View 1 (cartoon, one colour):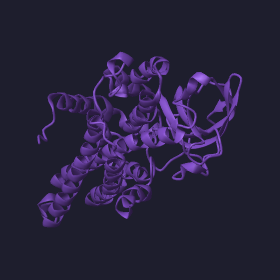
View 2 (view 1 turned 90 degrees about the vertical axis):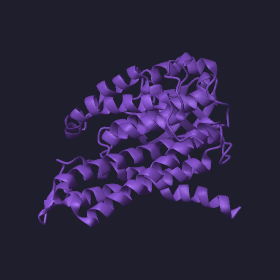
View 3 (view 1 turned 120 degrees about the horizontal axis):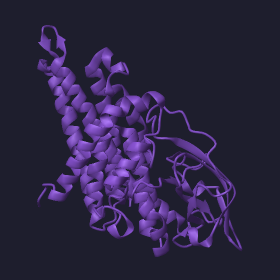
Length: 378
């Protein structure tokens, strides 16, 4: 068993790290102060191939794999989680379901523009009354001669305010599971509206918005998979996405850990550097071990998906462990900074806020524990 990264994976890690350090880090404060969408950086990610990292080259992507994607996501989140989330929603939640469920015409029409950063994608599942319980989805698609007319409301949708392509789950019959279907909806479609951008605790430059659909007409050609496949599309998409959220958590934690180490090396306390105090050393040692454990759970889940295995359990395990881990790591990193950690001059203040959402989206921590507990309850 060889745990070393391949030359390709190491190269992708180095490429993303160089981009994040040289082109992203110097501009974070500029974007964060204005809550500005980082359009130029997103376009650059597209030019580099990262907006379609696992999309085959024939459809305009980089043609790499899920492990490469997890590594790239970790490296970007290590520096700036907002941009990592934008890339994540485009890859995992929009590109992936089209790649895995789309017919040839749909792949040719949408994947290249998504993969190259020319169009941004999003995924609309959550509703005011349907979050963890997908069976409560009320957005309804009704068949007519021209395709389907969709009416309803979605909420907490990442990227939609800037997106051109939306993978959307709607109800086509009253059956809790088999009554759901998936659609590719272009955001320019009449009746598709984004009424506002939400104000959030963190992730300020990754726009989150509700969607209102009013007599939104989509063609038969825009159904993703077959009628009734929506539940399977949703669950498969979330399982893949959870690996990526775990990678984001590892990245934020790694960034916070590095900030804590650097601060502790320079901060003088009681005539010593903070890092020379045993309590600080032990705190940092625990942080490093937890990050490393989360990284291997995440990489293992990514490897499992690359092998074509069912990743439901591996993804849930990685997401639960890593997203809970990053809450503790960012807390401890801020604590090591003392009062300075509470000031927005330090990156750990932003990392602390950004990390909080990770236990909530793409399946809350409680949902991951439910998935895992069913294994041994059977």
